[in-house]
Length: 468
Ligand code: UGA
Image 1 (cartoon, rainbow, N blue to C red):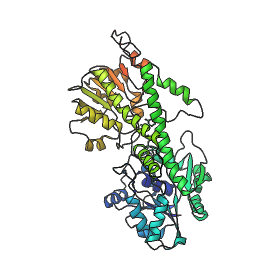
Image 2 (cartoon, protein in one colour):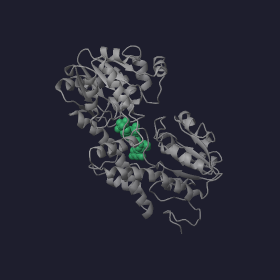
Image 3 (tube, protein in one colour):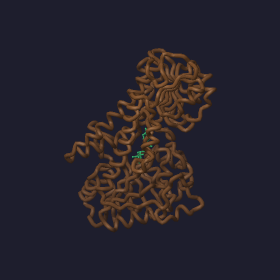
Image 4 (cartoon, rainbow, N blue to C red):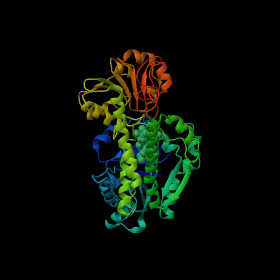
């Protein structure tokens, strides 16, 4: 099938490359000429596993790039809209890009097309898109508007697209549902997974994935509600971690216990320094705003956001507890991305913490496997960037772990201890076992677990973190 994907950001680029891998002819449309030039020249603008392979496999054949939206619409049966929906000052989603794309799409509709929202949009957006296209004089019979939200996580977006838990199609007509079904048929009939060149199957893949067909409005709501629920899970466990710290319990043990209940599940219960990224913070706010607009005060979401903010502050207090004053102290920071596996630093709790620590007069040496280039643009020039965790640790008063990169959970601990001026690790992602860290000679602080002191070191602090 001929497909146009409008917007070559995370979602658009991944969706375009994956649709091409399913066998469709994809035109990726963007008005950023520099981006189009880079993509046509083989550059890969984001750090995303398997994306370089897919782009080089299909670029120039099944995947082409264009700035001509009208022509792309004319040539395609399905038009996926994947443009940005950034938050406004009030916290609701700014839909002006969606609106202007809808207006332009109407100019290319000559025969039946399905216009599909792929960006995360508030409920009722599909109705507006429909109105805008009709207003531009397009015949109502010649198009449908549908919603097909994505549940991609940055870092594993390609795998999430091709091995999804579910494919969600929100349609209000049989004709548009049939067209979307056909687009995803290689996944739902399992034929993609039999191909020798298919992207490798991850653990826990549901093959073939479930296809869920709902109304357009329900699909729009499912996307917001899913992200809000996941953010709530994270804030819930972060709140539990705070209680654990007060009573001397271990949140990891608590997670093991509650996560074993299949109604609750273990995933997304990792305590830390709060959620970040381009989705959860924005979508929780936007979902609250849309509920408010339609008369429901979703106060639970206020609390989810408050806990998330508080979690970063608590971590700062923990750093103070460990180091007392910060002016002039040298801190090694491992991790700047908002999570492991990505170079994205949008709404990164790590960046927030680094900025706070700089304000307090500490000197930071940071290392991140992928996000340092992006971080350089936003961080004060006083941050030094290292080429490895060990270089960052050299002569530092303490080491902070701020992003859950896999490479940070396998550090050479004796070497790390040697590099640090003081063997103090403050781990915002609970990557290590406290007892094991103590046995290796570290003073180790983490989230929701008792602080541990090096074995055999007499101090005025008890092992459960309380002052003696
Ligand atoms: C999130 C959702 O997981 C995707 O399903 C969704 O498609 C995407 O938003 C979107 O709307 O586009 P993403 O933002 O890439 O994906 O990242 P997540 O893996 O969900 O992590 C979000 C944040 O929560 C990160 O800062 C991460 O460190 C934090 N997190 C995650 C925790 O603190 N604890 C956890 O247990 C899980």
